[in-house]
Amino acid sequence: MKLKYTSVLSLSILAFLCGCTTFDASLKDFPKAPATPSFSKPYISKIAFGSCQQIASETKTFDTIYKRSPDVFLMLGDNVYGDYTPDDPMQSGMRATYWQLSKNPSFKNIISKVTTFTTWDDHDYGDQDAGNDFKFRKTTEKMFETFWNLENNDLAKRGGIYQSYLLGDDEHKVQFIILDTRFFRDKLLPSDDINIKGKERYMSHPIESKASMLGDNQWKWFENELRKPAKIRIIVSSIQLVADGNGFEAWEKFPAERQKFYDLIAKTKAQGVVVLSGDRHHASINVSKNTIYPIYDFTSSPFSGSARSGDNEIAPNRIYVSPKEVLNFGEVEIDWVNKNIFLNVLNQDGQMLHKEKIEFSKIETKKAPN
Image (cartoon, rainbow, N blue to C red; front, side, top):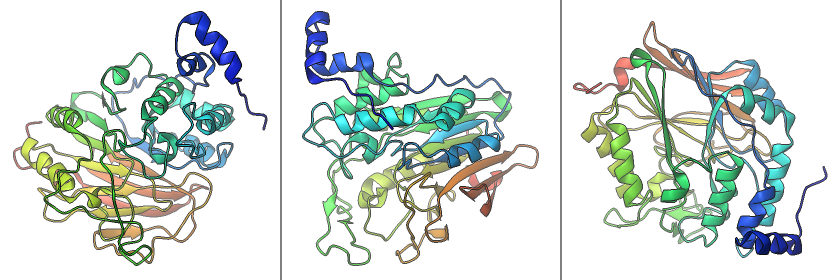
């Protein structure tokens, strides 16, 4: 595929003429996803999601998802695989893969016809497992907001890409809380015994550590969002929340922050929480213990490229993991009549690999305000 590039000289001339920075000028010719339609139905019955579009031109998974007629589609990060170029202020590798994805006909079809929300992970943030130490994070934030048509959103004013949406009528209200686990996150603690099971890359910070996952402002925003009335709350985290025991990037590496998450659900009495995550290149379902109610963390990855096995990981909270090397996506089906939620794991062909049932009553607080 022929990629579209703009020379640095041309960008500099454009910058001079418009009085803006070279990078800001480059956004004049930056690719964009199609505008996504607003949600207009009385309620949501099916949410499709996944992560890790490792091959930007791959169409099969997008086609399969579209044929299953979801009401909402979520892309949970690593939506493009820009080359890691942490010292490149123009992030040229990222730009190239955004162009590739923008030309994908199946991607354009589903985004333009199904209400779509998205977040980023490290591959579309800019560096491997990076957090707030990535020096060009404001550059890649502008790329993200431009590509996903969020320039006029309030994201740019506050930093980071956390967002929220309330869809459906009052009796069927679904809240989408999309967290940013990159822009504000402090450094991970490197393993002291790399590739040993449970310490493959990282270790957990001590429980007394002040290292943050979301940053003060996002935590305050999150609490305010949890207090809004909703029947079901889909909380999007690009990395796994509930998974425990392995040595890869996850909330478990910031134990005080994960406990703060659980405590906030209890404090706000927010009912109906289901967490969706990506990143891991396999599908899994993990369920929290010793929380106000069981919090299900449903992981789906990857859309395309290379899938890996999670079979050999330490995983005390896990109730399902996908077969080896299976490309997959997830569905959240909401049965409003019988008050059940189903977590469906499907392969690239749409074959059902697993179906987990959650009764509404299992994820309700006793005195929920809504």
